[in-house]
Image 1 (cartoon, one colour):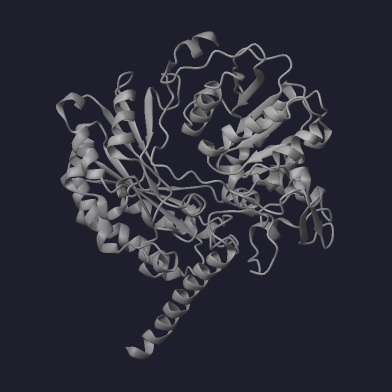
Image 2 (image 1 turned 135 degrees about the horizontal axis):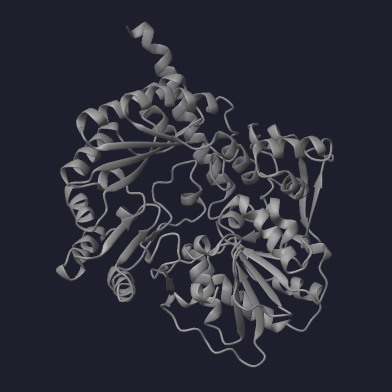
Length: 549
């Protein structure tokens, strides 16, 4: 254990805690190698450890720093839905009740954050005393300062005080009613008028974005230094949580933020990762490439997150090859231009083919495309278009190794497609694509349909799922285990299909209706109507085609 922490190279200076510092545990519900590779976990840890009024110990499922005997705060960074089972294990190892309602005044307040909880915390709400919704740059210091004001008060007083801080959600202070035990939500109300009726996600709007605070050979991405180049995505594909939940699109300042951060990181490693949902759409991305192309950085190994298709140039490919990258990843979603219009993917098939040609001309050996089946409005001919597009790419760039990773559409909260369900035909469509693509020499990598069902369940779930999650843990995290748990709880919660497959009416009260994202529901509905208009128009064109012939 000591050797793992000794291998870390820190890029910040932890504070020396005061004598009366708040004993704090900051946990990641997975192994160290996974948790320490999370940029979000790194940054939050460094923010907490830089405060002299906190004494912070890290906790992972496989190892930990020396832990306080009487912690006051226990934070959890939640990045993957199924890590909830590991969270249960961590709480039990600390001899803490799983449910917030069962904790006493002498036990720590358990707070959570991260993308899973910010998107829809409700399935996990009963396990947390409070949840931080949004960006840590704003929330963390506000939270700790507010806690210090009520540090020695009883638990109920602490929670009521913290609930007044913008972005801090205290689930126990909201009462949810249903039209029946297994029926729909009819009301979400604060317990009294002193508690805000709604909680607004907090958005950091600065142009200094995140960068690694620690580099280690023990990380899953060994010795990598990560820099956040952009946050959110300007494309706003209508299914995309990474865009809608994190709006507005923000870019790190090249001279004031990006270059100083990169120079700092490259003093301790030569492996650099540029992160963001749409990295190459940074307005000064070409200048950044030119900066990294200097002889002083010839030995730097460069990794890039997913890139925008029309930004793939020979210069980009050559720079990546020079810095030990052999492939790039592009999210295309579908080969059907009709479907891409429905989801607002502003992309032509010709652009995708041209990107492959540029990638090969610049010396890259592989191209990975991300796609999706089960997109609302999808027809069999749309899958045919995907197959034809991939064949065309292979023909246009012979010798370029082509991988097509394909998932199933999963509805996400705070997006225009949150009201759609998972298409049960998606599993067959994945199998059909596999049969057609593998004989073409295309490396087809489908994501598990069963995992998509579980993801959708948690994505659209409400608080009643807490009982299901506790039960599933006894059975294992397979879809069969979830189905078994639903059977056990029949009549006590809605059926699996209600959460996963049903299309929801747009006037329904959603489990997260009291938790506000960047855009109001009226705007999401307008974007949904735009998608439906495109779909209706396209279907009319399809219907008219035979007569036109």
